[in-house]
Length: 228
Image (cartoon, rainbow, N blue to C red; front, side):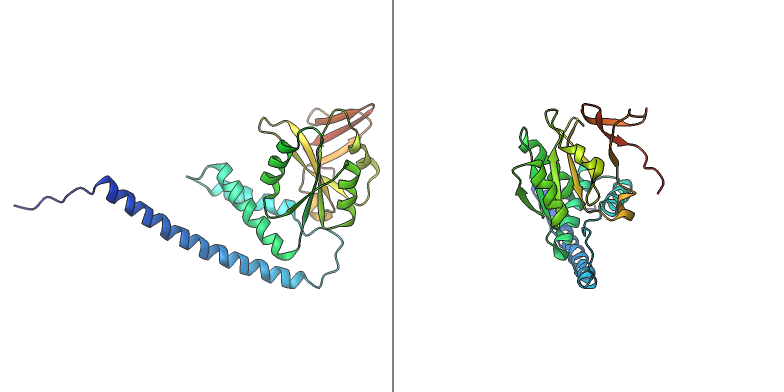
């Protein structure tokens, strides 16, 4: 009479699953190591470039994340987004020391949380004493200005005549409300794929989102960017 196989205990099953997780962790680290090696190769090739623009490529990052989110079947979207944002931020840090210069007078903790979700935790954060200081850092250094949107301020009107930096991202709280703007010296070819954030003295279109207003000036996020 054939001997019945004994069903593994819950403890044995847990130990088997943990061994599998350890194996997968090792395999994932090996792939991350390969990515870091490739990122160092990019850094070596770009080291001699004299380019006044930021090394940050927000449109490239967004394309990578959206592609991976679309491929995920079991992984929750926030998990995929955060993992690859951190990986890309860490690899960018191998190329250049990008600084995040924050100014927030009302709800800094909420804006910091949104900033880290958008840019990762690898970049160094500096606190500015004013919106102008943050914007000047973005004009003069390898830095991104992250400035709070506040109904009591109109610092963003400077974008109306700005020629050095551009607003390229709108940061939002957990409810989707706009709470800050990121600006920097983004390459024009990359900027074309970023959200179109602009200052207008007229009225917003039906597909536009008004982010802030001060007198006749309005800060608008458009769904489409005009052709160059």
